[in-house]
Image (cartoon, rainbow, N blue to C red; front, side, top):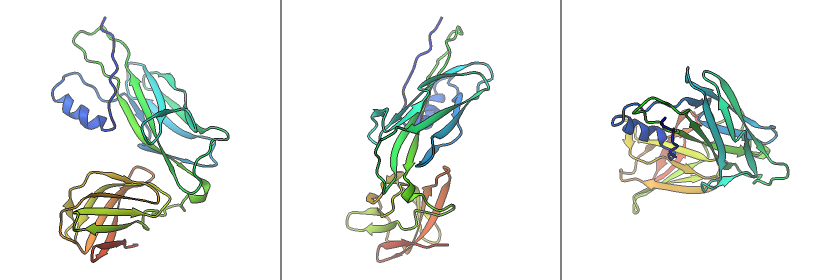
Length: 248
């Protein structure tokens, strides 16, 4: 009998497995699939619920779940996720509940970011020459206090401004909002010429910057991730390297 073994992957698991799949036969897609790619936990809710589905038509899977803080440290406070370990039968669904502990203090003037980790543990197999991998999914979890919950359909990224630092060849994001803004794409000009950048999360009331070697544009389009995991492009009008959003 060949026992299953567990490998821990970083956040870009899917990309790594895609590359590995070209080399290793028998590497399967994830069996345990969550119903979202990020979690918004609003203050006042008893818990945030994430539904997980076992896509395997044949095998049950064990599912381990835990939370990490912004620095990647495992935590059980001020938030906790239950159950930490559960069995999900083939073609069945279970839930994870994320709750805030009584008396736990979090900032009231801005979001707090955590990471929800979900690891699937496959059953042992008697099939020879089979590689079994415990896939690890990680998603952002934002705890949003009552005082900063946006109106429905409000694009809370619009107050963010940009600045092109031509001397340092950097594009600077200045985020005065109480929200985390995850930027995944930037294009320049009316032709929307791609600007190569690495995705960056701009923390509330903070700045972040990325390399920017293009000429100073008159228009930039910045794509960020919304609360539902979708991509939203916002137009910015630039004057002498200072860029403000154009509300549509």
